[in-house]
Image 1 (tube, one colour):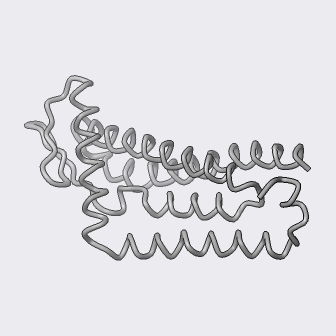
Image 2 (cartoon, one colour):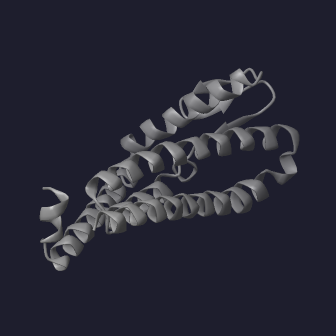
Length: 172
């Protein structure tokens, strides 16, 4: 459908499509989070990528299952450490935003890549905190990084929405 034709679609239909899309994303999030096999794949991916990043930075780590281990320290990647929940909420907000589906696709890509990278940085930093400042690990893990991930996700969405919204206004 062209932009010109899209302008003639009633607002309630566009809103309903956005709401259904956001609902589908949230439904998929619930399915993924309730499926141990699916979350294990994601947890393993984070362990492998984070271990590789740590090795590039001069550490000697290995990913065993969902654990990142070295002779000095190790961490386990649990479902709460994957950012799946925050990423799912980000994606639902992107799909619900009143803009073109192309802009939503861009927002989805930006969010998936951006939040994945933030989470890898989070896990790598937690490895360092645990290795060199073990007494602060729980504080940094529970308070600092959880707050930062939420703040980054909201900021990323606001940046995307501001850009997508201005493009939508220019197109009309």
